[in-house]
Image 1: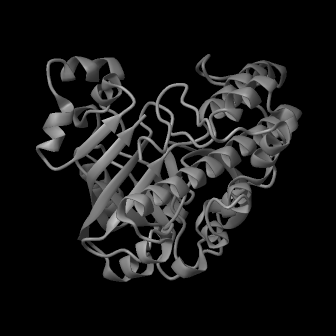
Image 2: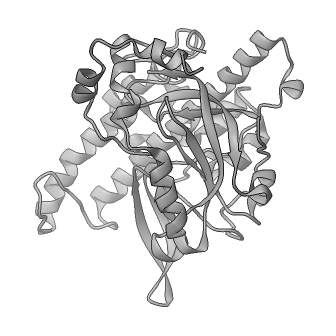
Length: 359
């Protein structure tokens, strides 16, 4: 997988070069573009948030620099906490929900965590500068100079939301391509066709985005801009925005931990809809900065430590692996138990890592 999926800072895939027209289509169509090019099946789109495409995307509001950064990075994992993790279902907490999600004890799984790469970062940088000016223009007082905002109907907000939708579509497409190459790798190594392999998409969900949604506030439905930063959607059973196959149990919620412990799959709940605008956490969250993690890892052979526990880790660099040691993160089991007991997510299965690639 490390050979098939370019990882690390500045990584690029040499056999996927996009023309300006193709790049435009990716930003407008998202995962739908990938499927149209043969990277996956049309059915995959049923299991991606927004069917893999946020319709308000407008590439005209994405800068030339952002376009250029994204053009060479589609189909790459990137750096930081991004990963592809091969795991196994170690524990089942809710048999009914697990069956609906086609998960069972002892089953091999693959979890992919990456996003819009340099394009999304550049979109953010470009529009922060515009929104900082807008905050003053609309006389909005903010408690911290690192904050910025503008009224949703304003020109600045509309342009940002259109550019952000493009970044989200790029991310949907990026994950679809990586999932395709993961499946290709399994087929090649195990000498199995896709049907025999049975590696199918459970769900793809955003975790850094602002979405226009309708929620009940003080007894009446209101259209809101819901910001989820390091958070993920957790819509309940019977929501029309949950794939039909999962409608009786709720939307799948993916909560990764760290490369040495475990990850979880949950489903969304009515409580989340009432108390947190249909949201829950996205991951364990860091305890140590990257610099602190490297200090803790100094003198240790992290790859060997994990191999001794049956977990194989490969990374773009030794430094990347040191930054991502288990001690750098909260224990995801403690985090998930809080979410479960608070009722804003319901535990379905726990996944134990077996092999991880890090950017």
